[in-house]
Length: 185
Image 1: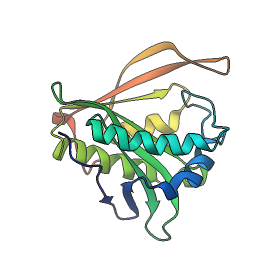
Image 2: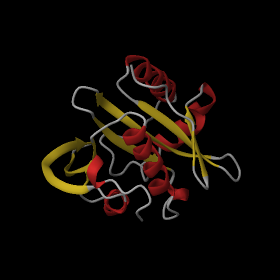
Image 3: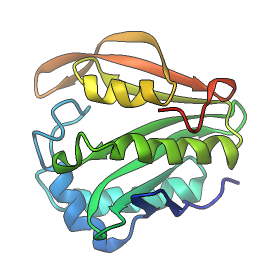
Image 4: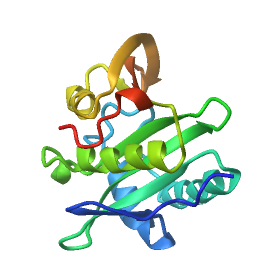
């Protein structure tokens, strides 16, 4: 059994389990075409999608296949995005990392700070050996976040996504426990 979705704190952020109260800001985040321009699905148009996402967060925790945390700025409590581990495989000791942040939070190091805390939890608490992440090859900012944490670009999935007729490639990144430098960057 995997541990419950954590509450983690960094110098500037609070990472916590999703609550029903997160539905409106989550919908605002995922309905932005600008924020999701490199995501593997189109922006949400139905507010009920946020409620289903939150319910899915609870389900993956209960199944022991993942955990997603809402990310709030500590200074004002504002919801600025989310980060998660999915596809946990306790036998292989692996999981996949993903994150989405509001455009107003970009360029401030929040994604790196959040992902570092989640990866630390993955290696220290879940005893993972490998964390994988994928990003659209056009998303240089996300690739930089992963590289700052020590992830290595391992390959390219050609024409991996087709969203609203737009075909894109995906970079696959991996980070091994033995390569992890929790204070790097």
